[in-house]
Amino acid sequence: MTMKLDWMRGCATALVTPFKSDGSIDEERMRALVDRQIKGGVKLLVPCGTTGESATMTEDEDARVIALTIEVARGRAKVIAGAGSNSTASAIDYSKRCRDAGADAALQVAPWYNKPTQEGLYAHFRAIAEAVRDLPIMLYNVPGRTSSNIAAATTLRLARDFENIVAVKEASGNLSQIMEILRERPDGFSVLSGDDAVTLPLIALGAEGIVSVASNEIPDLMSQMANLALDGKWDEARELHYRILPLMEINFIESSPGPVKAAMAMMGLLEENFRLPLVPITEKSRLRIRDVLAELGVMETTHAAA
Image 1 (cartoon, rainbow, N blue to C red):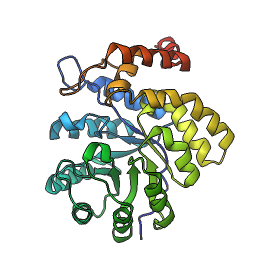
Image 2: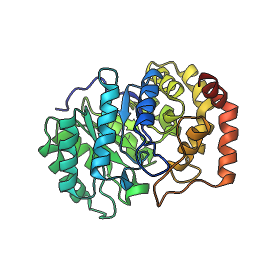
Image 3: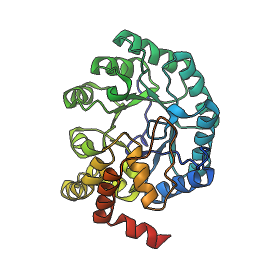
Image 4: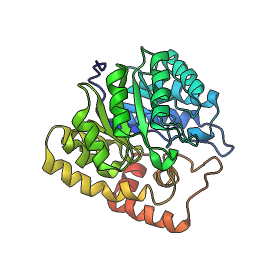
């Protein structure tokens, strides 16, 4: 039977990692960004995922960002720490470190590059679940990044076989697959969208929420939209969805998190620094993002608050 976690719902933010110009982690800004999320109504925080550029961070840096997030969020929000790897042994080690640091759950992405079979994916997640039985695990299916898809049958098998596999962040873009999971999942197993733009339709189909990129910029609006939908206030949720849809879409005009970091820099929230092979977005994309932010009114709001 799946662990019952009433808090695994609503808007979770896939946190960016702010860097200084020398490439080091900007810990002061990291604390400020986490605090801003919580004040904006976000109750679930996901450090060291794709949006956090964890692929270019060391194990110690990952651990530090997770520790900072837990420190600021303690008692105010839950932390689902990115602990994935394409090495099962490393994923187990990272998960144990997250658990020992006080994370509330671990995000486990499908192994990338290896391209395991469905049986290999099952064995990978099984080994992790068995190694940290006291730690809730959210699967992360993002074929566009990993080159392998966790099939609905595999997700459901894992959900049924391991009580601490409690959720999936589904970013496959395959609505038929996601609906199969929603229809057949065991009680207590949560499905969260991994794509901002389909949050509303997936909640209408029964999903519990979103692991969001756009909430880095607009935590208040994204959390409001998710909560309105979860409360069945469809007209209000739909109106807000269409208002913020341009931002959801523009965040992926180039490889994420390039656009969202550019937007946050325009809003005065961080310095627009990346680690190679990521580079700043083009000027053409930058102008389009600026127009979207201006239309949404968030640039003026942020600067006024500053």
